[in-house]
Length: 189
Image (cartoon, rainbow, N blue to C red):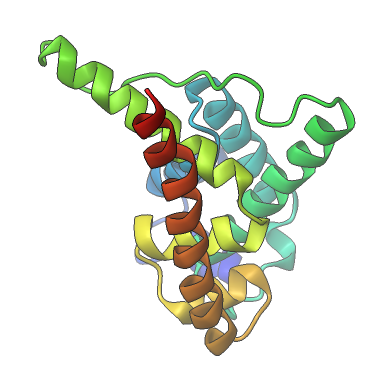
């Protein structure tokens, strides 16, 4: 039974294609959106890139061979969507321009705490923006999304052992950048 058969037939009668696609989107939207929000910090970009990812997934579902989970496959597509957009930004010389950071959550929190959260999110976005793609991706996929090294290896096209090394180096790079960017600036103020 192929992925499409199991996806569309399952243990119930075949739904309409519209219902199938709606269920597919509903079941996987949050993981893709979360990935984009973590790399861009922008609600608008995250929504746009999530839509593009699902468009690309539907276009290429016939190429899904079931060698990895659907979640892993979608994150591979998401990573490619982001990289393509990053190349466009680089060509336009607007890479990591002012981030449209928005606070998601309860607005009744203490205003000082909200300001601190926005500042911390902005600092993290700035640091992630300075990191090599593989470092940034492995950090987000492992530490923020909780994926296994095997899943990350499939997404990045590397071995699990390589992703472990990348994660170690990425954490060190993040720490170094954090100390240089955040701590140094706080001390000079």
